[in-house]
Image (cartoon, rainbow, N blue to C red; front, side, top):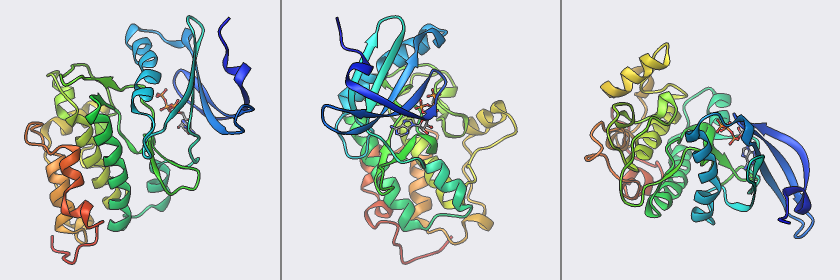
Length: 279
Ligand SMILES: Nc1ncnc2c1ncn2[C@@H]1O[C@H](COP(=O)(O)OP(=O)(O)OP(=O)(O)O)[C@@H](O)[C@H]1O
């Protein structure tokens, strides 16, 4: 008989809930480690796409692990029709969304550049292995337990592209790239767009570049892709940061820079320390 989650791990308290399951802190008697266990109740998976995505999640995490800026998978248990459990790195309780929301003001450029560099290292690793995350947003950017290292998580929407492209609307309104919404084939550059939106939000103190009162209004603004830097908000933001955002939040995916190229941009290389402050 195959081993179950509870044979190997002691489940401790619940630390989070997703659409299909719960996250627990857990203890391994075998190595004394403390991890996070995501337990998915398969009966809650309504359609075939959800089922496919969730069954893909541990496979994609295994392909990407280990990487210092990605939540690594440690173990997985699949009881074919009841539940799926993923044991992974335990992250701190604050994600990037909480950090932005709690501070209530624009993040200093060196802090934003240091976080973005780590996120781009994770994204470039995914892309090198043919994986697009497809749901990069501050809520999925976790930190290690010390709160120092970025860990990209939640690969529930990720897809293996294998050098090709896919279709299908996946993602979260503020962060989704226009080519996802227009129904065309798209590739891994959708993640670069989302990272560019995150830089904008970090440097604006929480204001997204494309917004509206409903999901439809946000989608329309995304498809128009009219990127602006209101002087009231961006007056003290460096020209270098804006240049990088423009190159990442670029409507034409073929002209949009890659994650590798973004890592070589002066704002990232100089860790957000720019001498100029011209609009
Ligand atoms: N590795 C982890 N370490 C610590 N906490 C985690 C970890 N993974 C998830 N969590 C916590 O559990 C919550 C739910 O995570 P999960 O990835 O299942 O779902 P979600 O992204 O909210 O939902 P969805 O099911 O829509 O993808 C997170 O917001 C976070 O607070």
